[in-house]
Structure formats: structure tokens, C-alpha cells
Image (tube, rainbow, N blue to C red; front, top):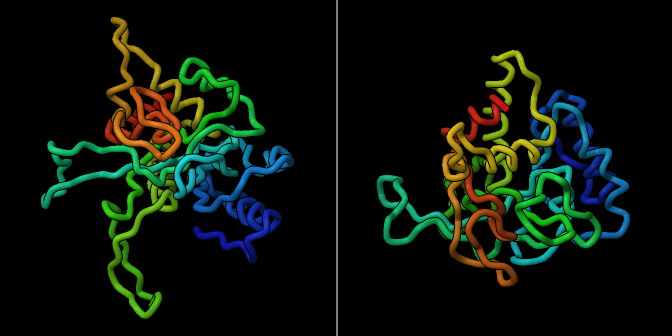
Length: 250
């Protein structure tokens, strides 16, 4: 479903969130954001609902904090540049790299949540948590039947406004499998994502690389992509074929 706020005010945006949850949404993607502000914690009740995962775009202007992406109650989604050949396969000459526009950094108001312990050493909440393709130059195709600026039809688009709902689809697939298995929908998903990323098999080897593609090149003008977690791409991009059943089993 699509919940449309009557204006861009925080009151109306959070009201739209509540409408989606009341209607039964278990995954809510928010492709909007703005500068952090001192009273943002007072809106946490809108982003903490049992059996619901909230996802927020980390922003398209490079390094810097934004809300609601900085909330510890949401899965913040950053962006990458994804280079594919004519057959849709990732090119070997140029790997997936951090998109320069991917928002990310440290919250000025929220402390580091427990699920980030061991992943980043700053005392503040770091974001994004994960990422997917967002660079408009390597973006995704969408079809718009309504004329926009005199054009309609197929467009190539990008931005973290695209990567957030794509990541939401991953969570939704996991929730669907959980429902089939008699489990409830995930609450929040951040704890699960970081726990799965840090898991090991019975013999000890880390399984991080099974669940995430580690983006280690590129930057957003303030932070650089590094092995494992970083403030440009988070944990990296989902290896969906393994992450979905991993979240379903968690």
C-alpha cells in the first residue's frame, strides 16, 4: 500500500506512517528525510512497533546526518554504484562501489545502539545499516504512465529513495517465509541483520560474506567504504539468496 502524507510536516509524515501500520503493514519504507533536530527522539514511538520493520533512505547528498535515517529504530539504507554488463552480470573490471551521494555518518542525538557494538567504535549511532544500488548513473528502470516534465514511459532512476524500498522488499520476503513457518514478522530487523552478519558456523568461520557483499571502495565525501561496516554502505549489500532465509530463520 502507499500512504501519502498531506504535507511534508513531521506531524503529517508520522501520521502517514501510523496509517500504514494501522492498515497492517509489517514493512514500512520511508524515502524522505531531513536534518536532525534536538527533539527527534520524541517521535520514536512512531518507529517502534512490534512486528514492524521501518526503513529510511540515508540521503543523496553524501556525508552528513539526517532523520529518520539516524534513528536506531529504523534500518537506514545507503547506496552503491553497481556496474553490470549487457546480460545483467556484475562486471569484473569494476566492482560494486560506494556511491558518492550515499548519506551516512553519526547521529548528533542518538547513542550507539547495542546492535552496533563491535561493528563501529563511535559512541553515537552510525548509519546507514545496509545499502543497495542508488547511483542514478547505474540505477534501476521504472515505468511511469503519468507524464512527468513532459515525459512518460521508462526512466532510469536512482537515489536512496530507490534503495530503501528495494531493501524493504528483502525484509518483506523474509517476513513472508517467517509467516509460512509460523513465526511473527520481524521487529525492527537491525538486531537480526547485525547478528546474522556476525554469525559463524559450527566450526568457527565467520559467515559475514555469505549474507553481505562487502563494499570496500568509494566514499561519500566524509567517510570511505572499508571492510565490514562503514558509514557509507553500512554492512554492505544483501546477498539476498542467503540473507532472506537467514532472516526467516532468525
